[in-house]
Image 1 (cartoon, rainbow, N blue to C red):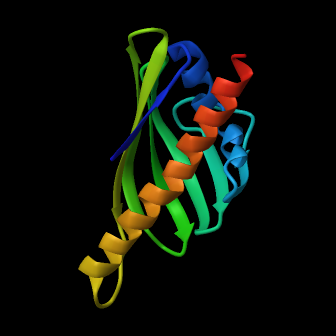
Image 2 (cartoon, one colour; image 1 turned 180 degrees about the vertical axis):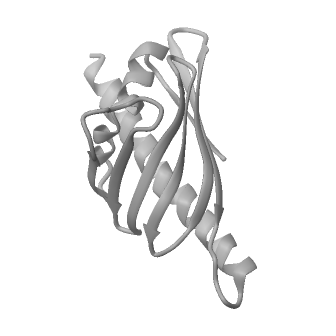
Amino acid sequence: MISKVVNRDIDTVFDWYYHSENFTASPIVFKSKWREPKYWEKGAIRDIVMIAGWYNEEITKVVTGKKIDYRVNQSFPPVQQDFTETLFESIHDNKTKVTWIIDIEVPASFMTKPMTAFGGFMAKNLYGTIMNASKRKLETSAH
């Protein structure tokens, strides 16, 4: 789990994450593209290519202004990520706390525990770059 406070209102911050093509503002996310015209709602499928690999993700739940849930259907390298949640919380002075909850396992024929620990470490860093990009973009555009 990682969190970041963004100095913008919750609607603006939610909208930035809701449109995941914004993730390419991170220096390590190269592509975020929806597979079909059904964007940004339950059942929508997107492909994300970043320095750590390719992820085919499915949106499983959206509560506007509150949370976005998804799972990884396929990836390379292979990971099992059945539940990921991005939460949005309005806090004082027009600020929004974003919390990304990541449940990841790296299936391996041996060393599953250390590989999963390393995968979790990498995921926190990767998602952290997206959170930093959102903070930079949204706070800069506010002025």
